[in-house]
Image 1 (cartoon, helix red, strand yellow):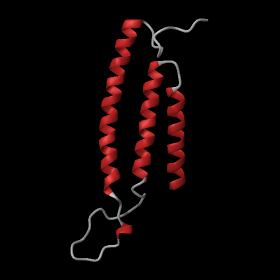
Image 2 (image 1 turned 90 degrees about the vertical axis):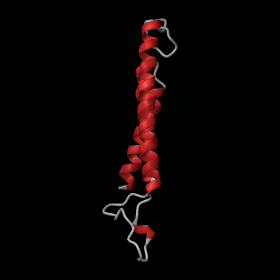
Image 3 (image 1 turned 45 degrees about the vertical axis):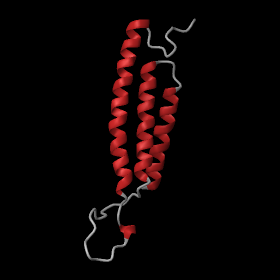
Image 4 (image 1 turned 30 degrees about the vertical axis):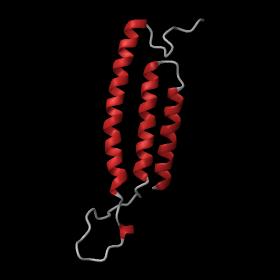
Length: 114
């Protein structure tokens, strides 16, 4: 399971960086979204990947904390998802306005000379 998560994080990070380096603004927005997904997956995996782990501690019993999942990374990822959604929406609005003002969707605002 850890290998699959590590490969997914690596592929998302590499794809995100590659798209960020592209000259068009839409590719930049998609690259930033992929990079944020990679970071969210990384933070989520830091809370230990457990299958069939109980979510609630029982009162009055001795508890082995290695059998439970850390809830803090899960809360951080939920917050990051909301923030990245709002940031992506803002980037798309800026992309549309920039395209309307300059007539191109290149990052620097002009078409390359050919």
